[in-house]
Length: 317
Image 1 (tube, rainbow, N blue to C red):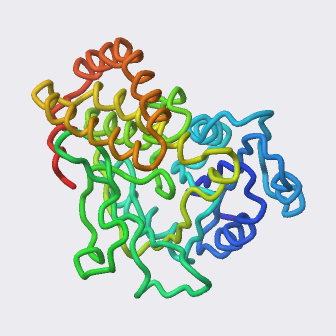
Image 2 (cartoon, helix red, strand yellow):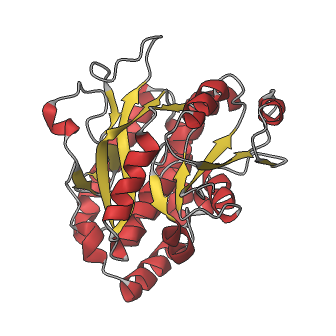
């Protein structure tokens, strides 16, 4: 008898034809059965043709609805108890899904697990010498998110499992209960910071996350995004600025406001140097306009859970 898949892999695609073959091959090489679904965000290249040729189950959208919508839709259209969002520009080592799944099975209190995500640079694949992309998500004292150890060499401390604030949306394994209980990613975010926000809401609800370094995933970073916009860096800056304000408003204590103000002024200065000032300013204005709804969410989260669980991670980066 065949073993039913324990993991549903959901791949949001957008002009990803050049990336998908290596990712799909790495999924096929996993040491456990996988329920696989791609959700295409209105690609203009051969992405959908490639999915058909490879016999990959997929959903096609007429236009780009964003990463958050694609993953939520993929989770709703699959049935395995664990859901694994994967960026199209990732590749998995053969034992990665099994290791992430085993950690969730062993600890019912975990909402999700994150692999050791390595930067995919050049043609070589040496897990021992590659630089890190993420060893888990962390927070600054003012509530900004960062990928732990990004760009660093792999020191011994990054090869040990540990509890973390949250998981990176580029490659992680989540319990289906997280999607049913919290409604998945916030689709109003479109892309960027939707994973931070879900981590925050999960922490408030009493869930935990773990870093599983024996699971290894390679990641290029923003490749599909760069192929889809005339000014991808500016659009990235706008969405991050907007979504970060909403996420901070949902849980960061009022005492952190002066620190946040300083950080936001610094962000505008950096944006000006990178010629993204207007896009960043627009994002901040959009975030401020969403504050009323975010503060309403904050009150609901405080009633349903404990904001201190998320705040305990401020300064973990």
